[in-house]
Length: 373
Image 1 (cartoon, rainbow, N blue to C red):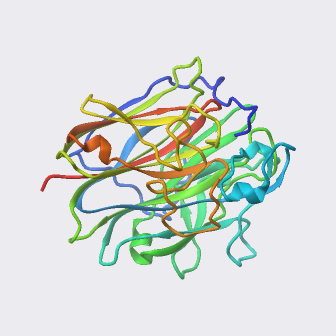
Image 2 (image 1 turned 120 degrees about the vertical axis):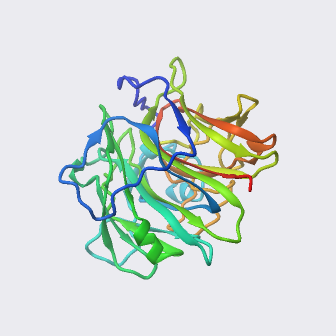
Image 3 (image 1 turned 30 degrees about the vertical axis):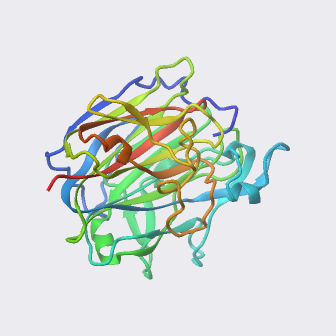
């Protein structure tokens, strides 16, 4: 979001959300992709709930990319678009933004690709696609297409994917934000590893103090007989994290029922919208069994600017994207090393989120931990 924006001060957000999940309970099954609901429900706030969980030999992988990028500078103080693409500090409100387009299809106006690294010999047990963005920038996009995207598996043709659950959609004086999602398990089982393409995200281009932003993330749980037994968990919702200064703006998600042994390994992934590089105050922490609180951060995601428009894994750019911008100007999809929080074992994990000094939106949390055999 642009530097003049404080998006959430007038939205009457819930100041604190606590979600307790009994992990052994079965995850909710979603409708198959393509099963259009006559009216996809929208809500300005969607509380975080468990979407899927399993204990199995295997793990979690994801593919992700932003769908809109920097076209030209609108501020004399702004870094050039070329430098921002390489990772320089910059916020979307300082730039004219335009759709990314990597396919050769004249009927699409935005499309991006990202690599999905499903291991050879693995079986996909669950896959969910998330997408979202800002509908109000230099133009105002109608919300009717929020729940629809086009998806192409590696080497395949586009298929329409429709949202199968409540779409988070919140509008205020300067922005019009949403997130939608759909179960795409059959599609990913068929398509497998490789470069996935997502097109036609309903996002607005142009320039405004709020800035343009948007992107997509595909989260996949898989089974593989040669990998350790792991507990994999996926939550989603649509929550606004207000600026931390002077406001109780935190969110908390608690995972209970774990049986992680001392020294267990783990990872946690987060999808967030409108986080700005250089707008400080946002953090991600985890506490095991009410013990020491640990910041989840790395070299690309500082502890006080963790939602800084990056798409990384353990601080590295570990999979191919087209395009592959280092600063994604308002879209985050990061995976963090959870192992330090598990050094003494864990029966529960509590994740805490705080908003940056301009506020941002939280959309997805996915967690993988070693389980006892």
